[in-house]
Image 1 (spheres, one colour):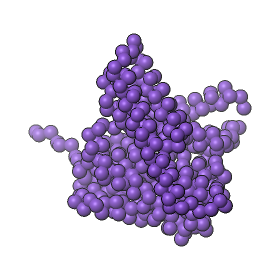
Image 2 (cartoon, helix red, strand yellow; image 1 turned 180 degrees about the horizontal axis):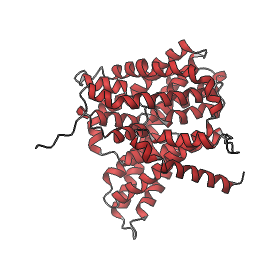
Image 3 (cartoon, helix red, strand yellow; image 1 turned 30 degrees about the horizontal axis):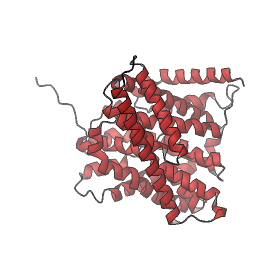
Image 4 (tube, helix red, strand yellow; image 1 turned 90 degrees about the vertical axis):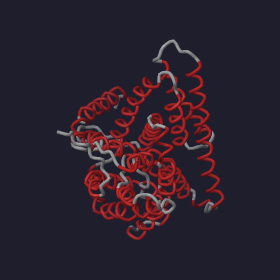
Length: 402
């Protein structure tokens, strides 16, 4: 099919998804359901067009994810980081690892997969999704006590890097298992390199960008977001070249730029919020195009029990383990955070990594992950407001005095 026709088709799908966004927001549905639904409806042969390109989908998903995390950093106030970094940092690091281990053993008991494959599956769905969390909290207009919303937002914005590291390492291990089992030292070295290199490059690029923009007068304000976009691209490319984690690098760079830029900060945030929406809509639609409805039915019932056990066992147990050092934390907040671990498009993007690498059973994994995400969005998304009210965490607006 000619490239111009493909671009036209994708553009039309994005426009349809955007027009459906407001009705979905009114109903409290995350945007990912709308855009993925558009992709599912239009790209799998029903209109004479079939899209099936795992490598391209994985690449688009990775670029979009980097963009979303960078914009999340730009929009994260430093005061939120100072408030949430202890609890949120524990949830976004140890919480991902605990969820992977617990859910991996659950899957191993339920499914006819090797333990290492189950751990890979668990790592794919271990992180929560920032876009889903932000979307539902905003649509419900929820303001939560004890900084619960800030904790959830910080966790969901920062837990993708650890999950991605685990997915990549477990995929490499399965692909290269014939070359021997990696040692604990090699795993620790790889993790240290990914985190360390990503953090250093993100810090350097963020500070350099802020220094340049604060000290060099540009003739047009419109050049500021373009310069930041170039900084983002340099950060991603240099981190990949030096073997670091791109998500860590772009998030740190985004936080520094978003908090310390003196000129053109608001213009840049508006510009990048638009870029983030473009990245999200394109990613969700491409994921919808990549998933074939006729292949979903066979794994629907097989996905139900794992999804339920992830929601009611693996996530709550992992969160409670993370809160052991924070015994003074309000028990209602701990229970709410345990129950609300919203998934989004990120696990589906992560599932494309082993699929693109040719891991056995990875196609079925994508479809099962799709249902786990769908069930999480519907069940946990619908439970946020009632549970917040039940636990008396919702800051109700004061009624005007008569």
